[in-house]
Image (cartoon, rainbow, N blue to C red; front, side, top):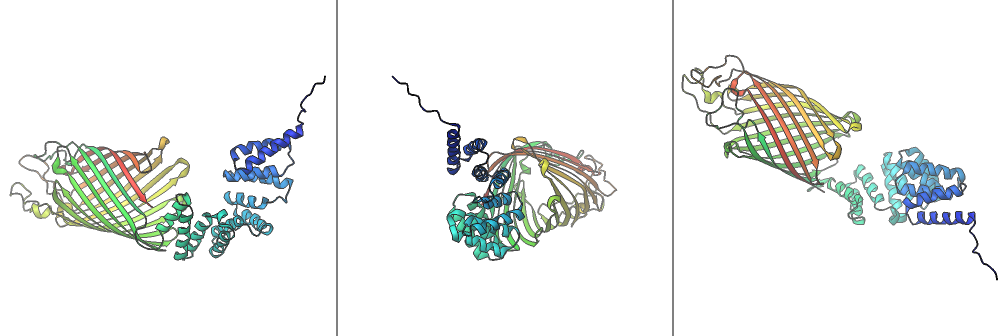
Length: 515
């Protein structure tokens, strides 16, 4: 009688099995599982250069480029002649921003493997990054020709960028259209569609529409003063429903010019004070001119019309030159001027002698028709580490009305604001300002509400404090909810214009953008 025993596997057999399993996982691109297996296999056989090379290949697939460089240096120390070593080093150096090392590695890889589409792709992207646009197009086209399946749609996308920078709009369009055809629904196709939308030529480009509906509680709908309250108004506070619709599109984009159009509509309806309901449509056309890589000039024209209490109230037209200049990490400056004119449709009657100021025609002096100017700037400074934007600015105001009542100069020396990303997807935005208005004449409005009426004998002065804070949170990519608080203190030496106002509001906004 004999006893049989199965032979026990040796340590070398275990190491070989572990190595085979790790290599198989890497070859099948199951990289999350392959990496710990490769590390374990290296522990059994630290002299095998192929194992850290396979680990680097997986780390590149997982976009762990810094880790890949560590693995590749280990592999190079074990066997500098490994196949694809220079290629992987070039890829890892490219994605970690060491473009000089990437170029050196990829040129070495090209000598060893002159027919590699992947090498030509990365060399083309390096040429594009360095601004050598012509050689970039040659390398990227060569990559597509050698093996399109291995490098598309990436090669066509970057080839399109190079042709666009060279001013070859037809070839750029052809390349971007190829990306959309080859990879529909992908991030590359979406990016190419955006490039096509901003390509030179007439026709709809980037378009957007935004609709908002909400409710507001206003503590001073009538803007009533501290002493003068119109007798026909039963109260100053009211709740309203508000809504707005804004839509715009670029109708032309060239290498340096763009033309766009925008339409808007705002409305409000109060629960009691319906005579203060507002309808306010508007339209605008703008032309952008890119002066250099960091400066854009915009000229915008606007027209707006308002109905107040369902009666025609005012027509406004404006011309608005603007300048935008980026200072990189130091932020963006927006400088602007706005020339506008207003035609008010309501009539002011002349008061009987003894009621109004003596020798004054109230209908003429309170005629608000006129023209105005606003000029100023706002600078926004980003602080990325805090997810915070700070802004500050200054404004000058001038209005010259037909009647003397509304003629003034205004100065806004204090304009401060911020925008901050908060936890859980919330964004808070706040702004505070102070405006000082100096009017050219005393007001024609009385200082009291009982006879005999008294009138100021000094020029009107307004000191205006404003504060606003908004909190919003996206719900989906196209829907967001927001809340708003607004405070206004119009301190005036004329009683009818001396008032305070607060607004609390809640809103839902739907926004769509194409492409």
